[in-house]
Image 1 (cartoon, rainbow, N blue to C red):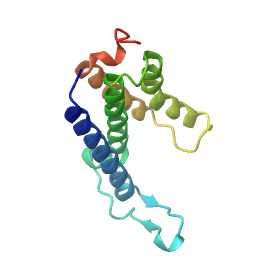
Image 2: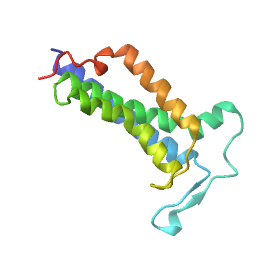
Image 3: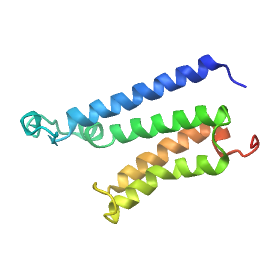
Image 4: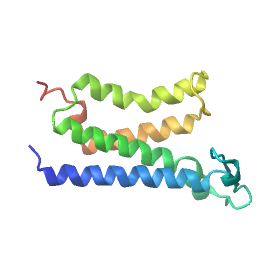
Length: 139
């Protein structure tokens, strides 16, 4: 069993990744609509062009959010809070939400590069944490 310090550190990192994703999304989108119209801002003139700028504006938040979700999944799996079927559900969740956007089941814009971002992120996590797909420790 892993120490509590490792899991606490991973949860703190997951929280920081989530917050970074929120801030990135908030500040790098072309237009931000807030519930209070006076606070809504338009950033379209300030958004830079180029591949890195496009990645930061379009895919960095997706990568950060997916990484945060997977770190929490690793911690919960190692603490035996999640069974194998729950881990599979969580691994499929980013793809399901993107597919739901494709069929207008939920609001949002479908982007196949989001799917690639999720797939690469999950592949890296499965290499680093192979126990995510292991049912060896099921109770």
